[in-house]
Image (cartoon, rainbow, N blue to C red; front, side, top):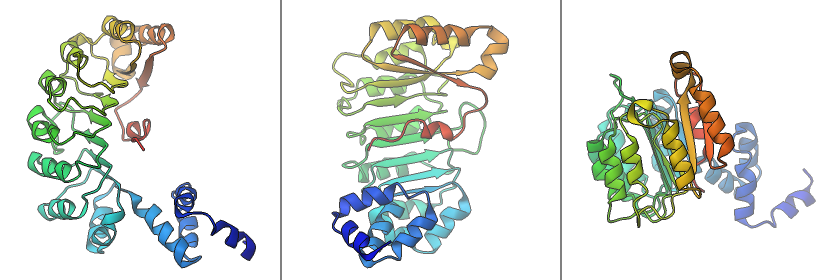
Length: 299
């Protein structure tokens, strides 16, 4: 890179540089090189590198904490993701004290979560938090913390600015949806609700989300096909025709239903062709964390 080119790029304001470096974030070698260019680029590279952090292994999280990186860079972190992490009491206290200006919290199949911790953490981020993503163990026995109505109830009162709520594989019931629909908060900014894998939710509970005067910004609803709870083809046809301004994302466990119930997947595919607000997702195996990357968190 010539001196003139570097000088021209340095004329860009910081927000432009940050946007450029953001697109290089997944290329760790490039970010490392950028950080060695000059003091200004180093500062921008650090911001980009720690703006969004994810922990997919216990060792990675433990190293991040023990090395002091969390306390050093917590003020830069806007989005944090934990997948299959066992959070200790010390971890929770550290997060409560350090991470207080988050826009996105993602807790995927984590262990040792508790409702009080999540309530306090969401409360401390209330002004900035736009996306909350939780993934429980579905209805099966598991060391993963169960995400239930009682687990979530204390948290909801502090989600006043959410734009996205994704609760996947959770043991929630219609009572949870009724709590959302009748909340005094009215969820003025909530655009996305994802309930894939919540097999105890019924068509009655989903209908509560369309109560007049509530969820005024809701645009997208993601649901799992479940004909045992009246969440079948006819119900989705009703939703699509009754609420044409909404987008309905239907997840079907193709591997389970197709051998047992024949052409259900094709019926849903036909519905998605008839209705331009219906989108079908065929799940060929068990749900994976990649499902969360299908729909990026709100900017």
